[in-house]
Image (cartoon, rainbow over all chains, first blue to last red; front, side, top):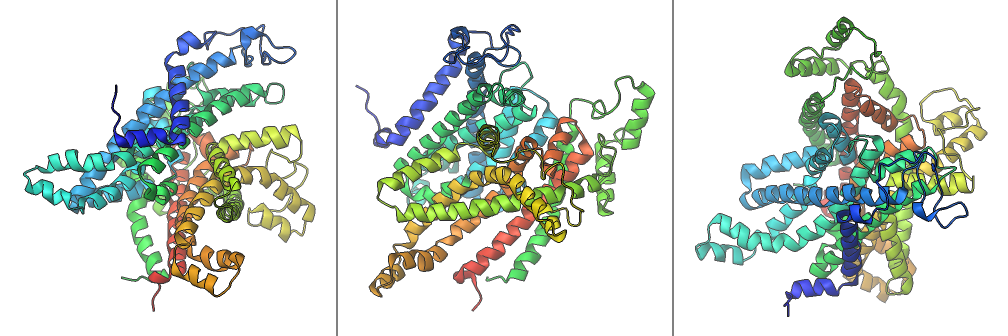
Length: 291
Length: 338
């Protein structure tokens, strides 16, 4: 039998963690098995069946369960493949931003002094700019592509982690067990890795979860503007931008990708909310402020 | 040390100069990474090599990047933001013409979001421990999970196309014209004494401003509720109860003001984010503001225009931060001078 740690067990007992985590897992599985799940090739055009309605309406066909777009591409297949883009961005960008942000936060919070000053000023500069606009400018400079989107989100959003984790590190460093570990002969690196990192991990996981939702939204905004993945890659933002021109005759093409984004962000928010409640009830305000 | 309001403004201005310099360098360098030719989008496809070179020289793109930056910075020092590649017009003129639209939209959206957020937050707190609170909590998570630009689309689908209740294209009825005085149509229509035009502007603002507000409302609501919880453990609340004040009076007169501080800082951060939200909302509602202008500039690699608008956003956020810090000082008795 597998023994779960008490913290993990407490997390899994929280209904929000189960619902949010379950939804997120389902989305990740859809993304992973997209080639198996999707009934059509997402780029395949069927010009005889353009703007077809969903299957349950009078003119619908089950071969295109959610209908087709203006080029006769299967909306369900594009939705499923769109999850691939969204989930890759969500996971890689969120963990990347968490890594960069928390490494800098550990340096700033543990060592203080001039590294803290420089990192603090960098955070200030980043905060003096709406994040969406910074990511759009980065994408103009980098050019289209999934990896560039991920890089842009990491460059923009590391500050979300850095600010919050730094203040947590400052609180942890004051506790008695830190000098005790030093006296016991731990090097600075050992103190950071064995004492401080475990102490800030619960907070970090909550932030990662919320960041996954933010990353999905940012990717959708970038692809809506046409500054995200290459035009041939199906992304939810691209689907929305395309379907917007036909919203009167075919609102489904618009509603389906909107739902995809909504479910992903909801999953991330509910999971983050649940993790926060189960690991540390005191964080309520701080988290609400960073969103 | 306790600072006065003027002290804050003074210090913020000192910090603003290096911040703007760093932001301008970052934006400038990132845009020079551009893998494509920035002129390719604006020259006719049959332009000759010589014409390309001439234009490149005119725009200064043939010089080394540090030199380009120095020239640009020198121009800004004289109040000249350069010339837009796609519009062939001065960047400052374009921005000044578009800025009032965005400021008006954000002002209305922000006001709406704050009022709704405070109202819902107080209600949710008043409902504490009941089933209504659970529903409001769930509702706030749902609303929070839909970003502004999706609200913009959903509101058009529901209220614009579905019920045909509100207009969703442009700032005012196409048939109406109002002489431009300030560029803020709500003010200009009143100056002109044109009530139908004023109402038309309000109608046109309703959906885009509401889309922006919905991004803010659930956040304010949740933070306000949680700080109200913190406030209610204080002695003066118990004392007010002993004095026989009604629960309603305690909540609205005593607790709300003391619980307002975290909400004020939240609004400060979120107001800056709201300017980011205006980009797609303006595109979706065809509002001719700086968000829409920025999206066009980004799509067409109009580097001078992107740089100019980027600096404007930076100035806006710095001003907002200062305003919030002064408001915080005003509201927090612990920071006030004796």
